[in-house]
Image (cartoon, rainbow, N blue to C red; front, top):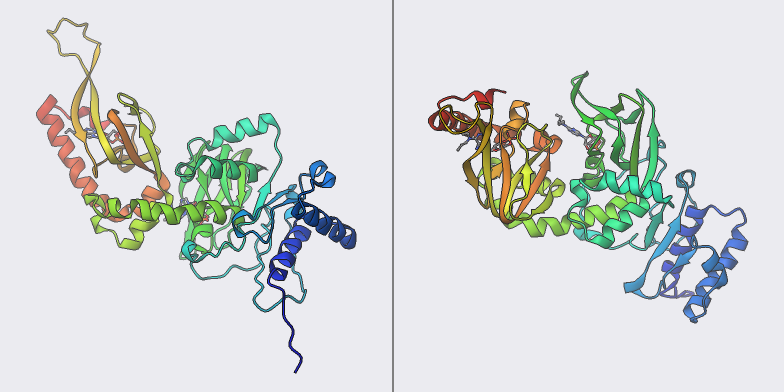
Length: 414
Ligand code: 1OR
Ligand code: 1OR
C-alpha cells in the first residue's frame, strides 16, 4: 500500500489561503495565489513585499509560528457574502466561513452551546478591518463608550472591535433582527428608537425599547441559539454591526475570563442566591465593570434609569434631595441633599427606578475609589426576574425608612 505523508504546515497554509480567497473574492484565482504565496515567501525570508505595503488588505503573519498568527483583512460590506466551497481538504481540516452581510441570514448554525474554553483558536488568525473616516470613527467611539459588553475588554481588543465594526443605516419598520433566525451580527445603536418584540404562543408583544442608546443581538452569538426577540426600527436610525466571528474571537473569549474573575464574587451576592448557577453565569456574561473616583456621581436623582449596580469594592452613599425644613435659615424652596444610606461590597442599588418604571429616586456617589458591576435594563428584566420579590420586599423597607426619616414617602411616589 502506498503511504502518503502530509507536511505538517500544509493544512494551515491551505486554510489561510482559502480564508483570504473567500474574503477577497479575487477575479483571477491563479494570479491571486501567485501573489499570496510570493508575499508569504518574501515575508518568511525577511523581505518586505512592495505589494503588501501598497495593499494592506493582503497582510499576514507566519502560519508556522503559532504565537504570531494573524491576518488583517479589509473588506466592504458586500464582501461578506457567504460561500460554500467544495474543495478536497484533509480530513482534520475545519474551515469556518466568513461573517455574513447584515441582511443575509446564516444558512445554519450548530445547535451546541458555544464553549469558549474549548475553542482551539481556529479563527484567531483572522482580523477584519472595515476602513472608516475620522468622522465615522468618532461617531463609533461615542456610540460604544458605554456599551457594557466592551467595558471589560483590554484596550487592544476594544480597538480590534472598533476596527471590525461597520455602519448600518435603517429605515422605519425595518426588522434588524427576527426572532427565531440564526445570529449574524451584534449591534450597537448610534441613533434611533427600536422596539423589542417577543412572540409567545403565537402572540407578539412589545416588551421594551431602545431609545438612542444601547446594544442588542448578543444572545444568539454567545450561546448559539436562535434570536430571542425581534428588533424593529421605529424611525430612521444608524447602527454599528460586529460580525459573528469577531464577536466570538473577542467578546466570547473575554467572557470565559470574566466568568473566572467574577464567579466567586457573584456567588456571594445575597440578592442573587435564588438564581441557578447557570443564570448567575449568564449575568456575568453580559455585565460590565465601572470604576468611580472618590465623590463621583454614579446616579443622579430624577434621571431616567437604564441600568442596575452591584458594589464590587469600595462604598457608595445614597443621597436624597429634600426641601429645606421651614424655620431653618434657608429659603422655603431650597433643596438639601441628605445621606440616607450606604452600600458596600455585595450590595446593590439602582433597582428601584427599574422596578417601578420611574425616575431615579436618589443620587448615588462613590466614597473613595469604588468599583461596581453594571447590568443593563434588558438583562435585568431577562435575568433578575426571580430576584424581584426580594427587591420589592426591600423597597417596602425604603418606604418605612423614608417615613421614619422624613415623615412622608412622597419622594418615592414620583
Ligand atoms: P439575540 O441575539 O437573541 C435578539 O437577538 C436580541 O434582543 C437579543 O439577542 C437581546 O440582545 C435583545 N429577551 C431576549 N432578548 C432581548 C430581550 C428580552 N430584550 C432585548 N433583547 N427580554 C426583554 C427584556 C426587556 C425578555 C423578554 C421576555
Ligand atoms: P433608583 O433606581 O431609584 C437610586 O436610584 C437608588 O438609591 C435607588 O434606586 C435605590 O437602589 C437606592 N430611598 C430611595 N432609594 C434608595 C434608598 C431609599 N435607599 C437606597 N436607595 N431610602 C429611603 C429614603 C429615605 C432608604 C433609606 C435607608
